[in-house]
Length: 171
Image (tube, rainbow, N blue to C red; front, side):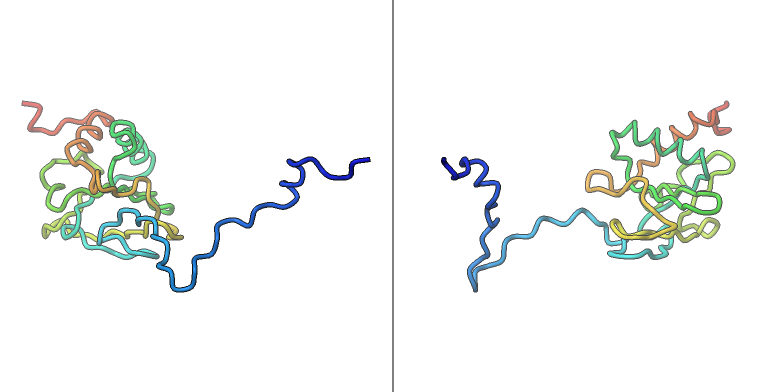
């Protein structure tokens, strides 16, 4: 009687050892590239950032904010730019736009623009890209292609969803 296992069973019983160790003194293997992280995003934890310096922010509360963020994600193929959400309180979402851009628009009532002007200075908690930062998290992260939310697209989307037109458009 033949007691030798078939070749495929023997291979399963003795798995290969995996990649070989590099020789002593050999150069290390190249590291994979790091994901895009703007300099205003902390490497770990979270930090408060003053608006109007690295970015302006448009703050929207609760379900309305989620609706706007979902629409922006759909309209941009999930490349909406940086959107931060808070998990407590009014569940604010902060849409981060280029510095100086939030003052170019007359936002609907209840929407807060935070920029570097004397009447709208604010601070936004910015979480790290990949760490535990509760109660802050990213709804949409900044990317090289979308380092900021497009303020014109945000404004148009928000006005469409709330059915609001600024007074200048009513004439």
